Length: 285
Image 1 (cartoon, helix red, strand yellow):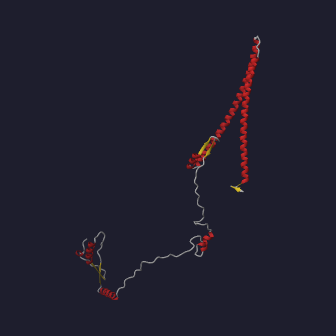
Image 2 (cartoon, helix red, strand yellow; image 1 turned 180 degrees about the vertical axis):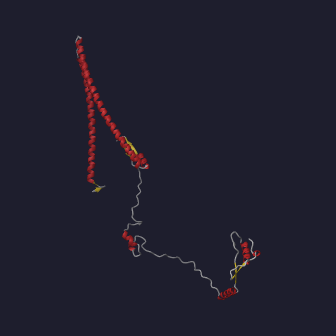
Image 3 (spheres, helix red, strand yellow; image 1 turned 30 degrees about the vertical axis):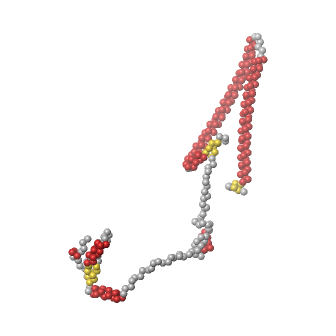
């Protein structure tokens, strides 16, 4: 089986190898700690034995009556102390060299960690949004048992997203069905709107306008009057005066103005000259 582009068996083997490496590292650290503790106990026991030997020699030593025996004893003791001093100085020198070496290693590791930290900060400042950064900082928690930073589990409510679609249809449909569903004969390819029904029109409540019929006698009389006026070369047209407006006028005032305007007539002759009406005949507004 393949999961995430890797074989499951290979991934299991890799995990087992990593676990074995971690166990070996832990075992080596334990062995180093045991060796250091054993060496420390050996040094303490050696110092204790030397002290006991010195005390025993002092107790067993029987001084001669002469001063030469005491001088010889003091000389032997001075040699032992000088040898001990030299060994202690060599041990101090070795410890100092080891201390300088460890100090240099710590300084190098500190510089490397600081460089990695600056690199991580640059990446975070330039590529991580501020909201995501603050969220991760709030989730970070230091574990004293493992001496490491851990991220707390965040409670999230995942809402399932919409299904990706290629068309705005409720059901998946192919391009062939879409092209054949457009004409009226492609009912079998339609997923919805299968039937095309006509509109159900309501009952009509209006009627078409019909002109009123005029009596033939009235038509004939009007034609005769118009014919007589044209024969006399004169047509009288009654018009309202220019500027006649009905805005802001009451009904009685409107009727009065209309009566005044109806008295003014404009006589149109065949020579298209208009006879001026006296000013006294014009209404005053």
